[in-house]
Length: 386
Image (cartoon, rainbow, N blue to C red):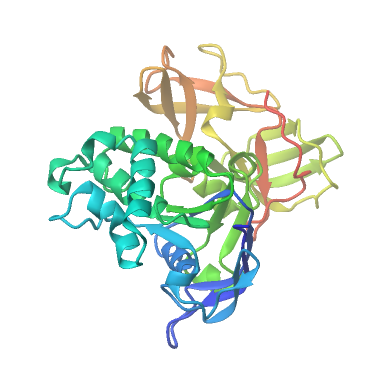
């Protein structure tokens, strides 16, 4: 089994504030788990603790059901792929991939078998005699991954392995890593990145980590779940603002009415009245409660050209800027007293700066957060996109 279990794991250096606190996490066999979060949130530190390269300050780590707190890295059956390729420049691809096995005393025939098989999987067959300087960045990273594969580990650990590659190579290598993971029926993968595209496309499970003062106050983990769970059902303002590119729009509001199937809001900055439907409410919220309304750009759509009539589920704004991306356009809208709003439109949209226009909020695609930043009042499993 290649399960990973962390219980009340924390990491603190001296008298400084904790880097990680109260990490409770289970990673299943053959699961692809991605650690995601802002700089300084402890993603790489947590990965290194699993690898045995950092000690736990408190808590317990189990791999395959066995406690690993005091187990040396070489005995944990994990293999790590670093951001830097760290290849020996004077060695061939074959020798780089088999070096760890040779040091471990593995027989030459077995080394050749493992390296040859890994090279076939990674499409490096024809490059085994080349030196690293004769390889592209993507090929070098595949050699580094191959060096991990030949060890036949229980757990693969990836520490931002694509960050040194250009955009095209990142996309290609990301697909290769996903295919590689699918070939190994038992080994689990843990992957650190700050790139949301990598997280959303690779992960079975995303672990979103907090940083700064919130770690000591709330613990390190902001939310754990499948990529679309975090996207459609963020547990807090932090999660809603971090997951999604471009980020979610936030509008301060006050609850004026609430029932089982609708909620009435007044937007604090503009005074506009909204009656939102499409997401069942657990219970009516307090009238007069101050909240934050969240809506993603793709769920804020322009009414027919020139329509400035406000309905119960629309706002009226002036276009400030239109970013044309070809298949889509991002429309920046004025927002009294706050950051401009962003709406997503078709690439053929006729909207231009200065246009006054109504924009509709998609039914069921809005979010509410209380003054502490926690999601409120909605059935967590419900999501209906109109």
